[in-house]
Length: 265
Length: 219
Ligand SMILES: Nc1ncnc2c1ncn2[C@@H]1O[C@H](COP(=O)(O)OP(=O)(O)O)[C@@H](O)[C@H]1O
Ligand SMILES: [Mg+2]
Picture (cartoon, chains in turn red, orange):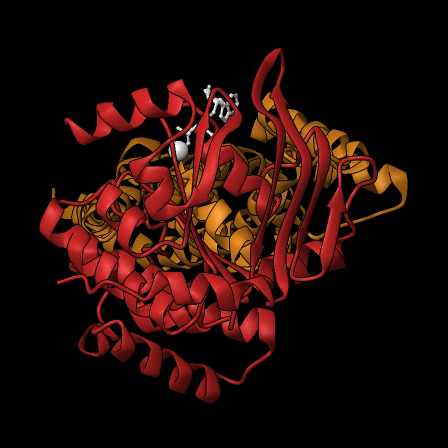
């Protein structure tokens, strides 16, 4: 059961928090196709932002620009103090630093199928943070138990359900002690019940104060867990504000249409 | 009939010596050639043209030139350039080149078959390009390529009989020597053929079963 978080109080507290993400004038073109156009927003430490919008509106592209899986065509992204500007190429060191600070969870999990669950979570710690095997494994086991999967440590990912794989992917991202977590439709590939166990882990993370940007089709999650909602359409942000307000009283006609469409589904 | 069996029995030790050389040269060609194939597969995908073009040249020559010509080039041609190799060294070099060129194509197909999300996951957790290849992409690609590589290894065992042209005392050469001394070419070639088959047929069966095993353990 999702509990209602005291979002109003949190919103006040958030104003004074540090900014973890700032996106300015962000644009992305694939050839002649404009996937993102003049995107601007900021996310403060501890904030949970849901990005919703129709398919093809640029949500994934935006998330992928944040950790530079995609390089933007215009504008800048600042994440955990590292600024990447379209005008000048990022250095390798900046990219490594940026990706360490941002944990990414994909729709298709993308666990490494040839490694045990434990290795999946430990390897990046060893290679990226330079932790010893022992340290890394300890941390991995702690995180696996946090997502309820300690017993799966020595299994291979293909022996786990989709929901379990996604929770392992979350543990793998958390293992690098990210400042912010990026989720790209983490439950879209899952049956509803399996999606719920992933959402429960995400809610627990949000309540523990993790800064999160979540691209999602789960309206209930967006409304109850996130502090703020961004609605995108055709590569632009068309609506943005506190979750309850955006859900109940969207100001633009396009946002109203989208929300009606998803609510009546 | 008794006479034939006696002849075969007397010839077996010499043929087994030849078989040992055959297995050694095949082993060396694969041990050098497959890592070369991996390097070339990565090389032809490199965005750096000073790596890509030489890799492409090595692959195209290795696949374009018949193995027999590479063998003769290494054994007869290199001495005129001041590099004299024993027949074993020359054969190792030539067959490793052929192996590298052909397996680079097999491995390249394996690399391309690794889902794109794997690359992205490695990048997203902050691994370097090299680490991503080493721990994530190459191990999966090699697993995908393994059946075809093993199949190629069986072909290479047979192709090593070409070394008879540069007087490497492998299985076919030994059979040929016995034939020249006794003028009983047909029976000795049959026996040599049987020895090749005794290795290749079980090896092919093993490849098929490994293939089934591996297909069970991928994503
Ligand atoms: N690598 C790419 N090459 C070309 N077009 C792309 C690429 N990635 C995304 N697009 C296009 O950009 C638009 C936005 O895509 P995406 O960010 O995936 O949308 P969403 O995640 O909101 O469904 C789509 O029209 C899509 O076809
Ligand atoms: Mg998407």
